[in-house]
Length: 125
Ligand SMILES: [Cu+2]
Image 1 (spheres, rainbow, N blue to C red):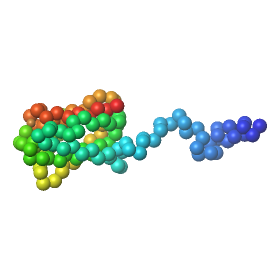
Image 2 (image 1 turned 120 degrees about the vertical axis):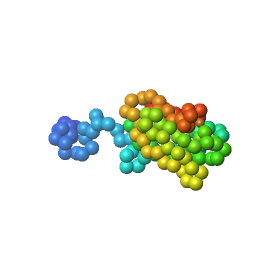
Image 3 (image 1 turned 90 degrees about the vertical axis):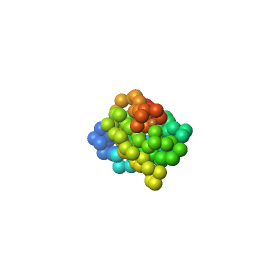
Image 4 (image 1 turned 90 degrees about the horizontal axis):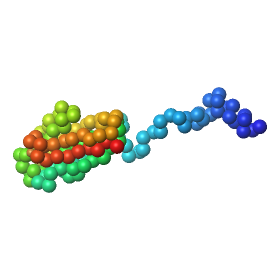
């Protein structure tokens, strides 16, 4: 009857580890959280955005770090995130950080240059 006693203790929530299985699992270590966003560096040059596709988890907190290379010309000097109503101007002097929280549903978050010629996307899985 040892087993039954253990089950009873579980039901009474004596053991903190019991009965937690139905709760959501903690995010993997690599997934960004509001306290610790995941940094993703994006180079902007005459090659466009590199990487041009980033994958992320639903609701994940990201910090995009845009590094501007003058080879991108004036075309790549602006980064636009339409979903965030965000338009920022890059400089070769220092990287520009953009914090964002990915949507809770799967889908794609686009980012472009100011003229929508260079394109990148974050795929939310
Ligand atoms: Cu452009």
